[in-house]
Image 1: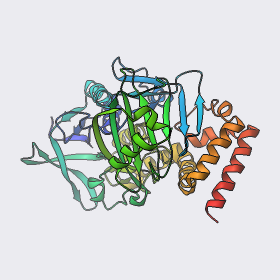
Image 2 (image 1 turned 45 degrees about the vertical axis):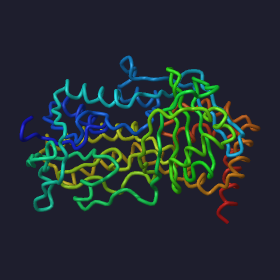
Image 3 (image 1 turned 120 degrees about the vertical axis):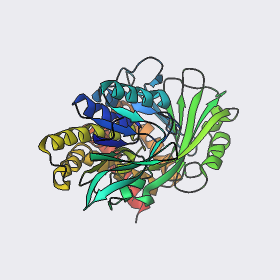
Image 4 (image 1 turned 135 degrees about the vertical axis):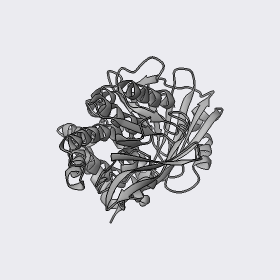
Length: 408
């Protein structure tokens, strides 16, 4: 690895590697520093991704072995066991092996010319007169070395440790949930072509639980919560939830991991002189579902284009790099605002009202309306399209009434 590169990327996750890939394809010299010994380890995320989102990024179909299953829709279970299902005519999502997925993105980035250095933790930024000029890297937990660069792309993840050194505001800690993700075997009565979602404050307060079948007979089950201990809540879900327990009571947990999820929407400013933040570090995550891979990689693509243009102009100033924030906001802003409102509305609803809402959706036949949705990533735009249907307008007024009654 060269001691100097035009761009340093902190973190070899999908967002860091995707920005490195796009820059390398544009002929930019990129160094990627990954603190772990290999890409994708440890893995925390379930890896449930939209197929359309992957296609828009130019990543679908994926190589054999990465995709663990594809899904035609979802079933939503209320706290008391009522259900509302949506099924599409073709697969809309897939679940990937996150270790293999991350390694695939890093591999094609390396093939394009990006340089990776493992066991290399970026301990600090080199900042001179308000400008980021490089990074200090500790290799193999031993010696530290300075790596000068023209610009740093921070893809370190949710810790935001490097981001804080720039003085930028980090993600909204009040909008964090703590997640547990487990792989289980011996699950009963799985619908292998559909994802299941479980709601209820007794099981996942402030978020929801999920069950994602794999084709090998196993499944991924998890939840996130604003309060309580995730592992204890997972046990309660598996043994007490009226719908989940029928499938999971006899299941055996093979492996388990824990991680926080940010639901507050993108940070207000993700750039400074010689510096950009992408992915979880910039809180580029869907507030409704907690999915960050597609949103983060979309912004990583934007970051690469802005950085390439900045290098060509020899202008790495905060003023020029502000175009990154602007383009990300133009791409995600409307949808994020809608999703934030959805998140706040659901959080304010009692379990009884969630039960009533799911029963209402089933009675109104909204499954036949929602199955016309073309994009599950950009949910604000999708909502606008389906609101043309009279049933959706009825549902909107119903949910507004529920929201107002919960917030008198």
